[in-house]
Structure formats: C-alpha cells, structure tokens
Image (cartoon, rainbow, N blue to C red; front, top):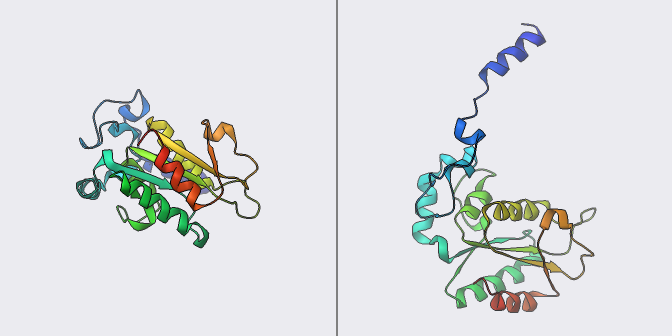
Length: 189
C-alpha cells in the first residue's frame, strides 16, 4: 500500500463529528448533579467515565467542591494545605486532581474540574524558561468556558501574567498565610 492509499484509509477510519458537537451547544446535561455542564462540552475521553464522576459527586457534591489548580511541587505543599483548611472552615471541599482518580489517564484533572462549582488557580514561582504553569492556565480556561467563578492567585515574584490567557483580575500573594487569608475573604465562597 502506498503512502497516499494509507492516508486515504486513515481518513476513512476517523470518527465523525456528531451534529450536536459541531453545532450549537445542546442543553442535555451530562450528569444532573452538574447543572451547568451540557454533554456537548464534555471531552470525548471523559464520557466513558460517567459512573466514576457520579460516584465522586456522591462523596463530594458539586456545589461544595472547589477545584484547586496548582503546580505540584514540594514548595506548594504548604499552600495546598492552607487552601484545604480555609475551604474546610467554610464547609467546602478542595479538589486536588493528584489526590483523586476519576479517570486513569491525563484527562483526570479535567474530570475533577468538571465536578467543581468553583476554582482557585495558583500561579506560584515559575520554573526556568516559564512565565507560568501552562496546565494551570489550561484548566483556568476550562473554568472560564463553563462560566464558573475562580479566584486567581499570583505569586508576587512572577513579573506578569498574560491577560490574553487569564482575562481576569488576579490577586498577588507572598506565602501560604496570604493564600489562606485570600481564600477566606473570597466573596464567591
């Protein structure tokens, strides 16, 4: 089989896009417990994990869950702990994707995010040759797509954040104690 024939065969084997995905967003909810998530906005690889998502929501109700977007490093452990404590004091649950296995693949953070009514994005000190963590920016974009409130925290050592990615006002912090106070004072909780 020549390269051209192989390419033709591959094109024929690609899945088709459903009318619902290619047109306007449908109103059918993916899961009734997530009131703002139409099936059309659920990434295809997550659809098969519906029962795991439902089980997660049974333990951690949507309206009391807050997705925490942060780079997982030793230096951020104190920040994560303080966020969890501040949310717990308000009767809320901090969802850290690395602590849950809704899926068994790289879509797990997105599955976790979909289960939360709010989010907290933490842009801590950047790694070399980075301005910010791209995963946190991607997850924040997902929350923006869903129209969910999000507290955006930027470490004071970061010079700037790209407004074309973030599109929202952020609050600067110095340390874990600052983060705790900012979470406690957040009006969206």
